[in-house]
Amino acid sequence: MTVRDITIEDFESTIADSEILLLDFWAAWCGPCRAFAPIFAAAATAHPDVVFGKVDTEAQQELAAGFRITSIPTIMAFRDQVLVFSQAGALNASQLDQLIASIRGLDMDQIRAEIAEQDAGEDAPGA
Image (cartoon, rainbow, N blue to C red; front, side, top):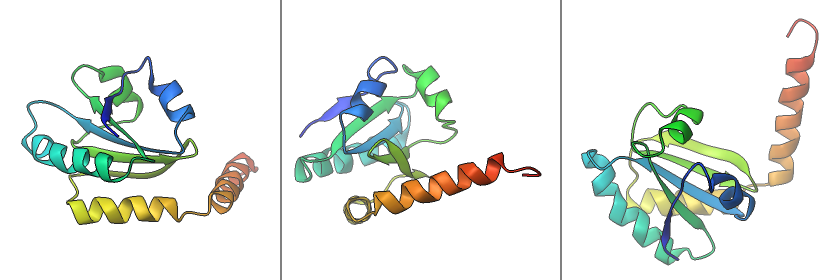
């Protein structure tokens, strides 16, 4: 699979149509971003069931701001439309493969239950 350019206009439809979505927030002037790009592209080829998207933080400032991106590259991963990973800094190929394996192994029912529990705690009096 190829790496897609993600914009604010197509983000919602991309995440809705993706079981697993990996996003690379980057900019052309960023050396570490340029060094990470071939690793990200190789992983996209090796994992065709995962959607790989790149968000150009210069061109997509509103989208980057919405995710509170303060350092690039930042890698975010979503599974079933739930943010399950976010980290600033490039990963090497092995780390990226391990991340993908970890995301595949997540118990999403458990994660949704934990999110619901946190949300309920925030709504409690005195929270």
